Amino acid sequence: MPLEWVSLKLKNFYLASLVLLGMLWILDVPVRLNIGVVTASYISLMLAVSIAAGFLLKPSYKGSSAILLDVGLGLLALMSWGWVAVNYIDWLTDLANRGIEKWLPGALAIILLIEALRRFCGSAITILAVVFIAYGFLGHNLSGIFEGTAVSPTRLILYFYADSGGVPGLILSIVCSVVFGFLLMGELMKTSGGGQFLTDISLSLMGHFRGGPAKVSIVASSIFGSISGSTVGNVMSTGVVTIPLMKKTGLPGYFAAAVEAIASNGGQLAPPVMGATAFLIAEFLDIPYLEVVGAAALPAVIYYVILFAQVDLMAKDNNLKGLKKSETPVFSRLIKQKGLHLIPIVSLIFLMFVIGLQPAKSALISGFLAILAGLILRTIKPSLSLVMEFLGNVSKTLIPIILIGGAAGIIVGVLNITGLGFNLTLGLTEIGAQYGLLVMLILTGIIAIILGMGMPTAAVYIVLSVVLAPAVIEMGVPVLAAHLFIFYFGLLSMITPPVAVASFVAAGIAEASLWRTSFTAIKLGIAAYFLPFLFVYNDSLLLRGTWIEVLLIFLTCLASGLMIASALREANFRSPNGILRMLCCVCLSLVVGSATLWLGRDSMNVLIVLVISSFLFVASQRINVFSQEQN
Figure 1: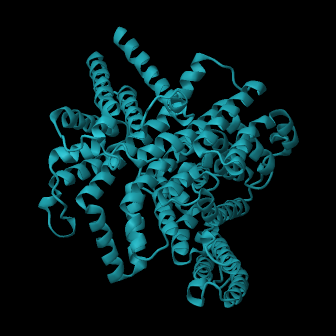
Figure 2: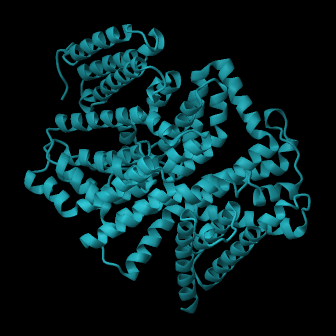
Figure 3: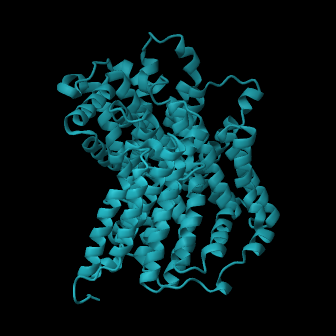
């Protein structure tokens, strides 16, 4: 039908425009052509195109009338958000004027943003944004901690619409530059065959060990996940290969899916890129990027060592073998035949750390090199269908992040203009003062998991850094530790029921139980639930302190984590002796993990506790109190 053809062409045009606009901005083309474009105008234009594309990608309902409606709404979005993009500079010198020519397009633009958010990102974040908008208008009628400053409707609309403290502000600026660059690089690597190459490399190194395919999943997902910026996208990219391999060697489907989900989620916590969030944290806190990467390094190492240990123990308990050597690629042959796929990763590190090029430009250049490598190796064949598939994959990740970035701008605007941000910080701080920091942190972690449900990695951090981080910092927690704390718990929403998007997607690939996959992923990712508390109370784990302090906290955390991994072996749940061993391991783990807190972060007595606890741990593995072992 003609309408369907128009809709398809418009959708492709919007997607191509979105990618092209982002690339031109990152490469400073407007500056080189002496075209004066301010950041807010660029952001508004990117948001306009994202909303228009979102309406066509997620239609309201089927039928010709729906196509007309969605095309019309998209054009209205282009006009309303394009209006502020064109007039932004002039309006800066005319702030007192809040005429209808400003606030009416602004009101329409906000409504269209919320509708696109509802369709593309689900009800949770949409309800949150609507609640904040309603609070902006009506919050002054409330009492107590929730009483806000009265703001006139026109001022509030224009604050959202055309102020750097609202939608076209810092959050969307970072999303449309740094996050965009790394998302594009991840998709270009996947399209060029680089993602498959990383999986093959991992398979050649780890595939023949017991539980080999699971370890392959961990290695491949951690590397690609750090760059891709999307836990779910990473599960869908590497999981289609690793999950069937894990099942082939005897791992249950739910366990294979859980390994893929937790490994992909861990990639977002792992340097050097952390799903582009490392750059967001550096930008928000105005600290060097290398400081963020250094701080995240040791927790990431502990996270993956514990995950490896649990997978290895699972394989041992079930007598699982690895793949045959004949079934795994040969490492030297892979490097010789397809080693060019390593160039994008090497170039990214070189451009950022040696030359000091901006992260977004480094990612974009590395993405182009990935395509070049794919063309040379003939792992890709240029075609229109390949381009459209690439644009479709980019849109699935980029558009929701841009829309959520717009919603986060609204939330930030309300928090600032009404004083709600200060009030929330004060409220959580009072909870901390009355019940202690631990209670306040547990509450913050729960809220972070709830708010993070269903959101992409970068968006999780953006929202939580605004809503929760100030309250944690107010309690005296070091700034970087506070931001990493809320980031960790926000990401845990990917594997924590009831939403657990990453676990559910992986379970779908494995054809396994959704809930059993989620609970297994929680067990495998147990380190992520405890590490944030440890580095809040002792930020030596974030490389803040002397080398002795850093070494002590690293060793105790690692030993504690390995004890927990042993405690959670499925074999321990099958007999009374096993349950007793599990309880002993948990108690020893808590003693060792907290040793630096009650003995002092630089006390050498910590080593004595570590040695004694390790001895007791080994002895506990031989517990046989009950006369009969249940099988």
